[in-house]
Length: 360
Image (cartoon, rainbow, N blue to C red; front, side, top):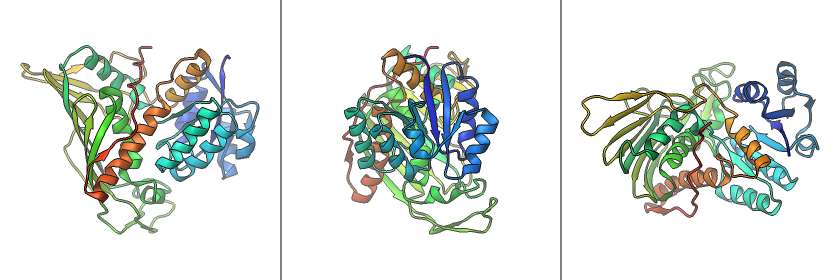
């Protein structure tokens, strides 16, 4: 089928790195043909800065004969509407994280996509970077033996001190688990496989937040979601994971991700990046050893996931940032919140395969 053509819906804060990479490092593998945004000036700037051929209205872009795959970089509550319109129109769609705000929204998108024989994929694609792919090789090669447990920590004090429009992080579909949890859970699932049961506790620590960044300095945000979430994950492999995501922590000394095996420990780099460092400490070693990165893409390579998806469409193979994995991560995140609300375990209904390692 040749080079797949990408249409981008939404040109907000994260779009710059996508545009840079999709027209730069991945520009020979895919082609960005159209862009749209509710704020026309943003789309016009993308058109001018990156030479995108067409600025279109959203529906016109989704139905354009010059677009094969929709890159959906809208805000989380809008992922569903754009994705559903795309798959209904017979277009593949790749969503920023999370796949959708709600399980039932994602389920409808996947059902329509299957009926129309189109693909769905989703961020994050950081697990395809050199750091986590190096960890994948070390695990597959048995460097720490059989994984028995894991920990993952994402803790800061929220986005209102730096983000130009942080309110949506504290509204339905936001919060630290749905904002940052996909990076950590996708990394864990790609390394350890699917989750079968979760428990959790979730707390809303503050009723409001005050923006200190420009241009909304002084604006008060009403908080609608839990901002400190602690979960326990039972993996199908038998490993037990602990995950904490929080917007209530000013400082800490916690690692990003560690995986504990029968013969040692693997320290996984920040899953919100593509690079390292990667460390291993085997059970008889006195010190940690830094492992050189063994795979490509150590730099910020956002767009790698949709590029792999585009090539998979052309080659007729599975894509790595798959619908099954992105839905499974969404299901697990909701499950942790559900377990907190109900006081009982959530038996995870979805599953997925570990994505194939990226060796190129």
